[in-house]
Structure formats: structure tokens, C-alpha cells
Image (cartoon, rainbow, N blue to C red; front, side, top):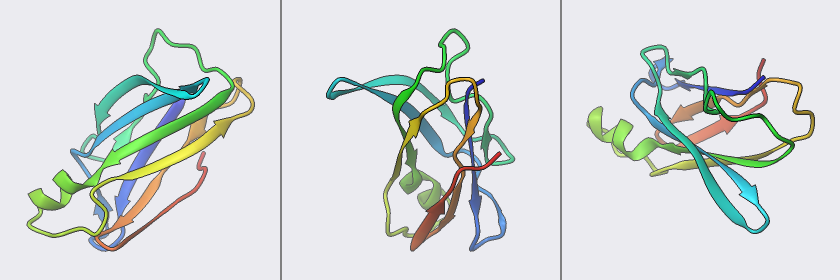
Amino acid sequence: MGISTHILDTALGRPAAGVTVSLEQLKGEVWTALNEVSTDVDGRCKYLLPEDAKLETGTYRVHFATAGYYKALGLQGLYPYVEVVFEILDHTQHYHVPLLLTANGYTTYRGS
């Protein structure tokens, strides 16, 4: 099992390709970097957790670097980045954490 994400730019009605996404895990009181990837042409990161890492219960954070995405489009976004913090309660399940994005807002949820 693992962690995945995708970004849909709801204002433009298309996937947000080329967004840098990083994954961290909270260890004690310190965030530990696990991986950094970019969304593909479909706005997806199918494998946020590195192949050699095991999914563990705990608290994770996904950082979406949105400023570069909007700059490439010639737009000014309100949020230079979005961070989503969530808990893994069952390491045997897959966790999909998508982002619905506009230049002036965002929504996230647990997907499948």
C-alpha cells in the first residue's frame, strides 16, 4: 500500500501538470523528508512514498508547490504552496490525498 495524490485545476478544468510535491512524516516533533516528485501530465503522483519505504501509521504532510505552477501559466495565485497534514491509522490501506485547486482556493479529501 502507499500514498498517492493528484491535482485538478478546477478553474481551468484540467489536471495540474508539473507541480512539485513533497512528502514528509512526523517523527517525534520533527518532520522528516521522505520524497519529492512532480505531477505527471494527468496531474498525478502515483507513488509519493518511495518504493523502498514501508507505509507506517503516523502523521504525514504533503507539500504542493503551487507558486511555480501559476507562474508558468502567467497567473498570480493566492497560495504559494498548500500543505495537507493527515494521519495514517491503518498501514494496510492505500491513502489517496487529492487537491482541487484554483488560483484563490483549494479543497482536499481522501480519495480512492
